[in-house]
Amino acid sequence: MWAIKALFFDVFGTVVDWRSSIIRELGMFGSDKGIDADWADFADHWRSLYQPAMEEVRAGRRPWTILDVLHRESLNTLFAQFGIDGCTEAELDYVNSAWHRLDPWPDSVKGLTRLKQQFIVSTLSNGNTALLVNMAKRASLPWDVVLGAETAGAYKPTSQAYLRNIDSLGLTPDQCMMVAAHNDDLRAASAFGMRTAFVARPMEHGMMQASDLKAEDDWDVIANSITGLADTVLS
Image (cartoon, rainbow, N blue to C red; front, side):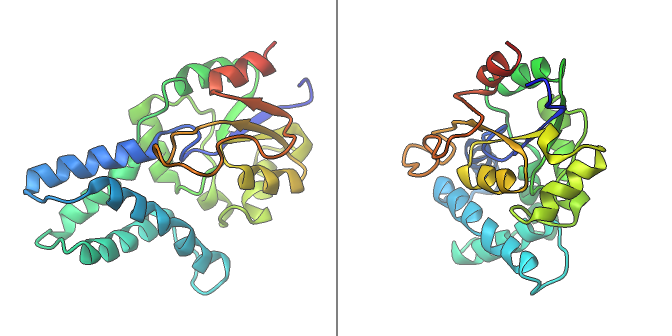
């Protein structure tokens, strides 16, 4: 590991438990507004619109658009589908900002704190900068730098999303490791010359999760937590 200078982390699912957090936020909003809905189902549907929305940008069918805006458009769609009405624009904005208030997995802060003693620790997320900074402040995530789709002007898994952020730190891909709970993210990063670490998050999508339950390729490091990753790379 002596050649590695920076660890780049996927955030949604790898560092933070987005699903439980979104269900909690939606449930509190529904309780305050007297809205009864299957919020777990709503959260899953909201997340399912994530990739299709970004693909419109990746494919060039719409200009660069940050994730907060894409999430808000998806939220409008889902409120209509679930028959939820009577909400003000300010209330919808607040619900949309739930993605800024995601809780970390129990091992994340401790693991990142240990890792930053030796490496630059950075986000490499599809989240926009304000979202990631607000999340980090609330959850005490000790990033050295916040990078991602907005700083690159591109969404993963395009090459620009990885390479432009690596270049911004004055590094080369082989000096950087992508850390993710998603095999497809690591495949892309590996194809662009990065080292790779898989951190298993078998509950990211709840009890019925069917994908990314284990490492599917021979990644450089395979761990069950970020503290486990620290145990390996700092040994």
